[in-house]
Length: 170
Image: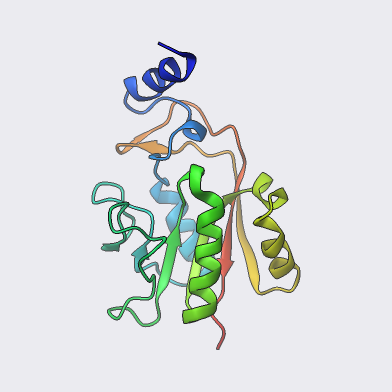
């Protein structure tokens, strides 16, 4: 058994514990969702990175439906207000997809990201949009105790997080 296998066993062996930065299946705590909604004055109506057990909205796009392919704008919701806490291993792909959905459909999207992601290649377009006030940093979450199967993680995240609001234009 290699180091990677041992780490994976440690991460998944105890409900509610482990290291969130090594697992794509940690969920956003509900109080964070409420804080974001209060701050932006909108209510999320679709969670684009969820499953039936951890969704934050009635409507969601599952891993199997693939939010990197499915449109985020939904006919049921006007206006569409999407929440996106992307799998850590696919942050760059989700930033690109959020940008595309925002530009194409002019929808509101709030995306949770790590501060250190702004230094990555996909972070450059975000920094430019933040400076131009097209994207707003709504909450600096700092380190988060993510949830796993409805149970708070034993330890806070290693990385610090913020929420970026891709604002629809009037």
